[in-house]
Structure formats: C-alpha cells, structure tokens
Amino acid sequence: MKKAVFLLTNILLTIFFVSCKNKSEEYIDPRGTDFAGSESCVQCHKTQSDMVFQSSHFKATAPALSENVSGDFDSKNHTFIYDQNTKLVMEKHGDSLYQVLYKNGKETAKYKFEIVFGTKHAQTSVYWRENNTYELPLSFYHSINNWATSPGFPADKPYFDRMVVKDCYACHSSNVSSKMVEQSSSEKNFMSMDVEDIINKKTIVYGIDCERCHGPAKKHVEFHLKNPTVKIANSITSYKTLDRQQKLDACALCHSGNDGMKLRSRFEFKPGDNLTEFFRENRNITDSAKFDVHGNQFRLMAQSKCFMKSDKMDCITCHNPHENASKNMASYSKICMSCHQGLKHNETTLKTMPEKLLADNCVECHMPKKASNAISFQLSNSKQLSNYILRTHRIGIYPNAKK
Ligand code: HEC
Ligand code: HEC
Ligand code: HEC
Ligand code: HEC
Ligand code: HEC
Ligand code: HEC
Ligand code: HEC
Image (cartoon, rainbow, N blue to C red; front, side):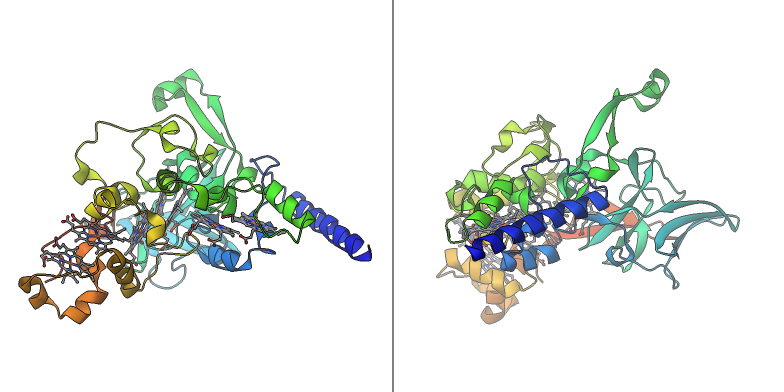
C-alpha cells in the first residue's frame, strides 16, 4: 500500500514537473494531448534514448544556441566577400550569432541565426521575419570546413528573401503549427501565391523525435506507468507487425524526394499508414537517372536488383533506425554477404584489389559516392561550383568506381 502511494506521488510529481517545464517556456505542443514527448521515454527505454538523442535525426532542426551551430565565428574563416564593397561576416554578440552585412566597411544590416537545419555534412540556418523563417545566405559545409553560399544562393550578391516554408519542417522536425493566411491582392500578384503559411514560433517540435516515428505514445506511457509489471507493449504500434511496404513507407516519407503531389501533410503520417494516401507520384519523372543522391535513398534503392529480386530488403536491413549510418564499411559487407554467400568476382575485378580487401569494401565499389545534382555551393571569391557528395543507394555494378 505504502509503495503504491509512493509510486502515485512520483507519477503525479513527474506530470507536474513536465507540465511546469512546458509552461515556463511558453511552449505549446501543436500535436495535442496524445503525445508524451521524448523525455518521457527515457525512464523505460534508456538504450534507445541514449542513441536517439545523439542522432542526426534528433538534431535535424534545433534552436541556434552556440552549442548547436557549426562553423567559425571569430578566426579568419568567417567572412564571405561578394564584391569589393560588400561582405557578409559571421559574428557572435553575447549569446547570439549573426550574419552581418557590410557595405563599404559600414554595417548595414544583421540577421540572427534562429534555427539550424542539419549537422552531418552541412548546416543551414534561418532567421525570423514577421511570422516566417528565411534562409541565411551562407551555410556551413563540413567537406570544406568553411562557409559557402546556401544551396541555390548567388555568390555575387547577398540574398535574404528565401522563405523556408513549412515543407522543410515536415521532413526536419516533429511538428509545427501554422495557419494559412490570404494575402492582400497587391502582394498576391507579386508573390503569385494565394495563401501564405504563418508559422507559430512557439509550436516547433525540434528534430525527429521518438513519436515522429512511433506515433502518439501518451496512452502507452500512462499504461506502463500504471502497470509496471506488464512487459508486453501496450498502446503502441509495433514495427514487427508491419509488412515490408509499411516499413519502407515509414522511412520513405522523408527519404524519397519531394516531387510527388501532396495529398496530406507529412505530419499526419503514423507508422502503418500507406504513403500513397499522402502523395500522388509524379509520373513526369520517368528518367530514373534523375533521382538525386540527396534525399532520395528510397527510390535509388528500389532500382537495385538486390531490392527487386529479394523480398526482404528495407532500410532497417542496413541501418539501426536509432543511430546514424555506421561509418564502418566492413560492417555493411557482412550484411551484403548475408545474401551473397559464395560470391565469385571475375579475374579482372580480382586484379584490382586483393580478395581480402575486397571483402571489406563492397560499398566502395557497389554504392559509390556521387555528386548531387540538386545541391551545390560556391566559396567566397570563387566562380567555381562545389559539389555536395553522397553515397548512392542504387546498389549496382559501377565499372569505374574503384581504379
Ligand atoms: C513506464 C515505462 C514505459 C515508458 C515511459 C515508455 N514505454 Fe515503451 N515500452 C514499455 C514496455 C514495458 C514495453 C514492452 C517491452 C519492450 O519492448 O521493451 C515497451 C515497448 C515499446 C516499443 C516496442 C513495441 C514493439 O512491440 O515493437 C516501442 C516502439 C515503445 N515502447 C515506444 C515508446 C515511446 C516512444 C515512449 C515515449 C513516448 C515509451 N515507449 C515510453 C514501457 C514504457
Ligand atoms: C520525418 C522525416 C524522416 C523520417 C520519417 C525518417 N528520416 Fe531519416 N533523416 C531525415 C532527415 C531530415 C535527415 C537528415 C538529418 C540531418 O543530418 O540533419 C535524416 C537522416 C538519416 C540518416 C543519416 C544519419 C546520419 O547522420 O548518418 C539515416 C541513415 C536515416 N535518416 C535513415 C532513416 C530510416 C532508416 C528511417 C525509417 C526508419 C528514417 N530515416 C526516417 C528525415 C527522416
Ligand atoms: C527514425 C525513426 C525512429 C525514431 C526517431 C525512433 N525510433 Fe524506435 N524504432 C524505429 C523502428 C523502425 C523500429 C523497429 C526496428 C526493428 O524492427 O529492428 C524501432 C524500434 C523501437 C523499439 C523496439 C525495440 C528495438 O530497439 O528494436 C523501441 C523500444 C523503440 N523503438 C523506442 C524508441 C524511443 C524511446 C525513441 C526515442 C528516444 C525512438 N524509438 C526513436 C524507428 C524510430
Ligand atoms: C522530403 C523531405 C525533405 C525536405 C522537404 C527537405 N529536406 Fe533537408 N534533408 C532531407 C534528408 C532525408 C536529408 C539527409 C539525407 C540526404 O542528404 O540525402 C536532408 C538533409 C538536409 C541538410 C544537410 C543535413 C546534414 O546533416 O548534412 C540540410 C542543411 C537540409 N536538409 C536543409 C533543408 C531545408 C532548408 C529544406 C527546405 C528548403 C529542406 N531541407 C527540405 C529531407 C528533406
Ligand atoms: C536482402 C538480400 C540482399 C542484400 C542484403 C544485398 N543484396 Fe545484392 N542482390 C540480391 C539479389 C537477390 C540480387 C539479384 C541476383 C540475381 O540477379 O540473380 C542482387 C544483386 C546484386 C548485384 C548485381 C547488380 C546488377 O545490377 O547486376 C550486386 C553488385 C550486388 N547485389 C551487390 C550487393 C552489395 C554490395 C550489397 C551490400 C551493400 C548487397 N548486394 C546486399 C540480394 C541482396
Ligand atoms: C544495403 C545496405 C543499405 C540499405 C538497404 C540502405 N542503406 Fe542507407 N546507407 C548505406 C551505406 C553503406 C551508407 C553510407 C555510410 C557512409 O558512407 O558513411 C548509407 C548512408 C545513408 C544515409 C546518409 C547519407 C550520407 O552519405 O551521409 C542516409 C540518409 C541513408 N543511408 C538512408 C537510407 C534509407 C532511408 C534507406 C531505405 C530506403 C537506406 N538508407 C537503406 C547502406 C544502406
Ligand atoms: C574493387 C571493386 C569491387 C569490390 C570491392 C567488390 N566488388 Fe562486386 N563487383 C565488382 C565488379 C567490377 C563486378 C562486375 C565484374 C565481376 O563480376 O567481377 C562485380 C560484381 C558483383 C556482383 C554480381 C556478380 C554476378 O555474378 O552477377 C555481386 C553480387 C557483387 N559484385 C557483390 C559484391 C560484394 C557482396 C562485395 C563485398 C564482399 C563486392 N562485390 C566487392 C567490383 C567490386
């Protein structure tokens, strides 16, 4: 009896603290009351939580606090020269970070880093203007360890007017509430859009969290808090019960490009849902060579014989959904070999690499790195476009992949 009272008090205290925390930050969860929040999972799923909180998914968007922002703000790599009179400088003032515009040596405007997108290869940031976010003209790229133009931005003049629409948040965050607002007719002509998304700043659920992939889990949490002896999952969709297409769809939601016609918001997707209810495939894109290595892992993988001729390959075959992609190439070879036992390469191939080395490097030759056609960037004082390079998910034979 005493134990039960103690437990109950604990539960009430937890609920009290959780709700207090949210109130003090004036944070409003736009998903309503069915969601428990990722912090509540830790107490029972420490292993998964420890991995997830470190993952790129969890950091796919974050408030632009200094610890979340990549890049140099104070040594020599923090200036971008557009022309002899115009430069943009990354500066830190107190706890805030800015891209500051100078014309003829005078500061003329400054734009605050508010939200960051991305951590692994590149990071782009946005500032708030009225009720929307706009992309800052410079992004940070790890491949060059430097700032360069944000993808698609000019290198001859700074540009501050590219709105980062709700669509970006639908793949990079767990939710955000927005309102469609009709624009005045003069603006309408100018923008050639009828409505505009007004984003509610207080409602951004940063990063891709547990419930983005597992669906609302408040009932699950409440049940297991009340029934600590029950070891069978209650009130949560189990991926184990999903068929292959459903599992694929749960990842393809954000990893199959963005050219389909939208029928429903990505935010409404729950595991087990069918992606065809969310998008109508764009049949105009028939040239499969156009599937970009950026953001389209699903379509590329789906073109591989491995995928088409086996009935079990999905994303989880090679990735732990709670962790970043493994950097250990030999670990992928083991997975390849689980389907390709007894594999024999021909003499010519074996001459290029000793068989032992070959065994650890399947990926190097069969999933080579390729330049993205969708993303490129320019360095300060350079006319040259640099490529954004990712590994292709179209597993195949690339005769020139390895010399
Ligand atoms: C009070 C304990 C408790 C809390 C809090 C809790 N869970 Fe669980 N969860 C369980 C138990 C018990 C199981 C069943 C045993 C297992 O798989 O670990 C389970 C299983 C699961 C499963 C596996 C389902 C399956 O069968 O494949 C998922 C997914 C899951 N929980 C997600 C979550 C998420 C997301 C949160 C936070 C929003 C959460 N849980 C919070 C107790 C809890
Ligand atoms: C809500 C959208 C969304 C869903 C659903 C999603 N992803 Fe992602 N994923 C992203 C975004 C955005 C990134 C890039 C994150 C970053 O680096 O900022 C990413 C990154 C990744 C990475 C690279 C992480 C790294 O740093 O190595 C892997 C691997 C991955 N996702 C696999 C999966 C798998 C497997 C699933 C399904 C179980 C899945 N994703 C579901 C949006 C999503
Ligand atoms: C990118 C999507 C994604 C995110 C984010 C995610 N999960 Fe999962 N989770 C999955 C998938 C997919 C599986 C099924 C894995 C399998 O079948 O091998 C899974 C499986 C599980 C399981 C079953 C046991 C296991 O490890 O396979 C638990 C428990 C779980 N997740 C809890 C969580 C918790 C807690 C969080 C947040 C801290 C979280 N997940 C975040 C996609 C995700
Ligand atoms: C259809 C889903 C989707 C949309 C929409 C989307 N992204 Fe992404 N984004 C991804 C995925 C998946 C990745 C990581 C894997 C990759 O590059 O293929 C990614 C990667 C990134 C990265 C690099 C992250 C890193 O860690 O290297 C940045 C920066 C980024 N996106 C910003 C944006 C911005 C800004 C927008 C809106 C203009 C946007 N994304 C729209 C899915 C999306
Ligand atoms: C789930 C099982 C499975 C996995 C895992 C798998 N494959 Fe395959 N792969 C197949 C099947 C089935 C075929 C088709 C064989 C045939 O045509 O007879 C195939 C075909 C191939 C081919 C020939 C492609 C072509 O276009 O002719 C290559 C190369 C290949 N796989 C490499 C790999 C590599 C490298 C990996 C690991 C990164 C891998 N496979 C993982 C099942 C798999
Ligand atoms: C046959 C194994 C295999 C399968 C299946 C697979 N991947 Fe990968 N994935 C890899 C390898 C190998 C890498 C590269 C890791 C590296 O180079 O660090 C990778 C990297 C990634 C990355 C990070 C891109 C980058 O270069 O940083 C994302 C995102 C990703 N995979 C998503 C997915 C999604 C989504 C699926 C399912 C549609 C999937 N993967 C299926 C093997 C696989
Ligand atoms: C040095 C580059 C290289 C590496 C490393 C490599 N392959 Fe290959 N692979 C090739 C080439 C080139 C071909 C086509 C000629 C041949 O069959 O040797 C090929 C062919 C294949 C085929 C098709 C064979 C057939 O009979 O149709 C499969 C399957 C395959 N490789 C799987 C793998 C796996 C699994 C690994 C890792 C254990 C691996 N490869 C490592 C270059 C490579």
